[in-house]
Length: 133
Length: 398
Image 1: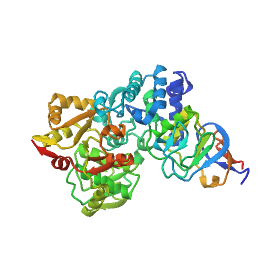
Image 2 (image 1 turned 90 degrees about the horizontal axis):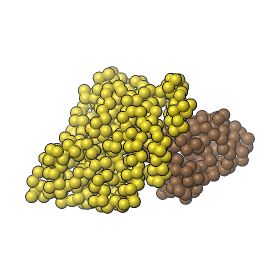
Image 3 (image 1 turned 60 degrees about the vertical axis):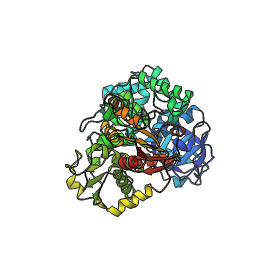
Image 4 (image 1 turned 90 degrees about the vertical axis):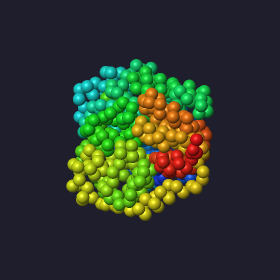
């Protein structure tokens, strides 16, 4: 696993290296994430109570209101944003939020390949994800 | 992605940093969705207006753009705000909320956005023509523009619609391409559609079978007001942006042959009954009755006022509409007659984007399946009924 490089698609440019916060459940940023703490607050979500700041957030896709883009932007503003976002299929809500907030974002990979990864490096310029640990 | 020299200029920052930021957003989104070029848009409709939804970060974001001296390039309307901009005190909205909500409206106004806050811009003065490209974001407005008017818009997000307003462009993909507008499944309606709330039920039934695609309905008719409710409910329970109705909507004829070759479902009487039971699972007495999700047309308000004649509502009663339509209702005396029957016409807002406490109710009755979906998600109990049913049941003779 370690050192393995996966190809992906670039959505929002940038590079990041860090610890993985992983879920196979979709995330609704509007209503499901508190922008001021960066914590997932959706009741019953497997990441409920977990903070995304300083981590690389890996989830399949977004869901819910298009106002979710504003929450992603707010997370960055309050310094609680993830270092990068990795999606299986990134739709407009997540993509627009990440691009305007300047958060590196990639999609187009089977996220299950990252299930057991602890640290990864995301390079949206080269459309690559490297598993570090 | 091919860009014209004007688009290149916007992207390179020659028209300012803010224009460049938004053009970059559209280029990135276009690349992601495989767009080969940009399209000029005739108008935009921008979501993310309610202070309840976008908060301080959203307010500061919009004020920052407004300060940057950026103007929208095409006629642009805004989605409903978190309160009636005039009657907010009556709704128990706090002074702080009102002040921040007004700052959001003002920031957009400074950019040149027309301060009519509605989910039915097409009833309030913003009317796209057939095959015209626009960038609208409120999901019921999107599906109405595509289906009833034959205009072309994707389901834009709060940021992408704002980006289109500022640049006058949208990436060419999805609903903008003819090939994506063909039906993907057919709905044959055998059940009798009695009133406008049955259109909500029909949409709910369709969404049990499909969550996306382009439905082609046959065996039913409906007015623009009724199809507005059908579309709104389809777009709430599912990710729909377009539907066709045989003999009724402008593109249906063109796609009739295609509709014969796709998967088919049938809506029988029993299907609608069970879908209605599913929506109406709570048997409680409503504390508030409202109509206007999406915002009422003048014809709908006129009909409500007719049914209310000589009667008084026993419950809190609201009609939601745009400022434009309310003015028409005032001039014609319809608004006064609604007030005499114990109702209030509210505008600039809707129950879905207001602070929940300002509705003064936990159990709500309405004719809109869309409202059922969003209000339930916010913890309300919701009862679905037609205008006629709910007025007859919850009013008394004067």
